[in-house]
Length: 42
Image (cartoon, rainbow, N blue to C red):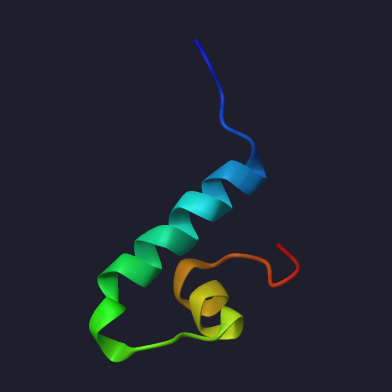
């Protein structure tokens, strides 16, 4: 069995959010963090 680090999960979540909203142009980190419940410092 393997595990993914918190940073890895947050990274995949951020990429998912970018993919879901690609047609809206650039996103701020704050928007991605809020939409995916990611701490802003990551």
